[in-house]
Amino acid sequence: MSTSKHSTDSHEETPPCRPRIGDPLGRALMIHGGFRHERQFPLYIERDDGLIIEIDIGAFLQDEADWAERYRWALSRSTGRVLDIGGGAGQHALALQQRGLSVLVTDTSQGALEVCAVRGIEHTALVSIDETPKALSTYTFETILLLGQNVGLLATPDKAISILRSFRDLATPETRILCDTVEPLAMCAFSKPYVQRNLEAGRYPGQARYRLRWRDLGTEWFDYIYLTYEELKLLADESGWVIADTYHEGAAYCATLELRNEREKSRAGTAATRTRSRQVIS
Ligand SMILES: C[S@@+](CC[C@H](N)C(=O)[O-])C[C@H]1O[C@@H](n2cnc3c(N)ncnc32)[C@H](O)[C@@H]1O
Image (tube, rainbow, N blue to C red):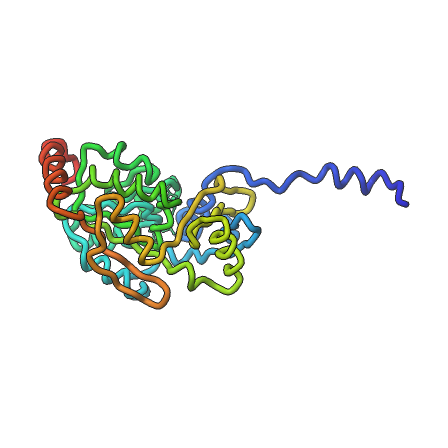
């Protein structure tokens, strides 16, 4: 039997490995982009079952030539005023801006938006996806982007319906939502037990809870979702949208959502007329 005070104390004094809540992604992006001169550390995403995966920060700052084909497909379908939700370091926004479109990037990472500004993105706003229609109630957009698998930001099936419904307030009759995700049932072998637990608990297979970590910084835990084509179709239908077409690329796919019918389009037309006189973004 050990009576060592040292071993007991050192165990008790070890602080819990809780991250300091901050902006891990923003910090990592600023260093990676050369906008902050500090030592870089890996950026991790941690799932609530303990799985930890390193995120490739370079993937946020790719040139168009390096993008997966579905992003080129999505951008070729982008017109008018564009809202890039969860736009990160602005790689898609920048390409559209260079084509002469007016783009507003929103994100919850202050650092990511600072990187956007340094890279020349003209319009940015620090706002969460669920607050966006309220925060931007004086605007309408012809294109709403949820790229980089940002379907995930819809978080849960219930939240997805409420967020997609609220996007109708930002819409004109012609608005398209361009969004991408990965088929959850095609996820890596090590995620199969997690997917199985979701199914057994009556959740969608692709529901997950994550947090980001960079050195001692972390985000709060957040809900995230990967949707099958059928699930996205169902949730879109519940919220006034319809899948107009898709581009499949392995297990990933990009979808175009349009307003479901003439009633939704006419509602959007009325809202667009109301807001047009208040537009700030040309
Ligand atoms: C996977 S990245 C995609 C970034 C970008 N769309 C791209 O493809 O390069 C997800 C982005 O969403 C942002 N984000 C996370 N939660 C969000 C929320 N609730 N509302 C808006 N943006 C959010 C993150 O900060 C991050 O920049």
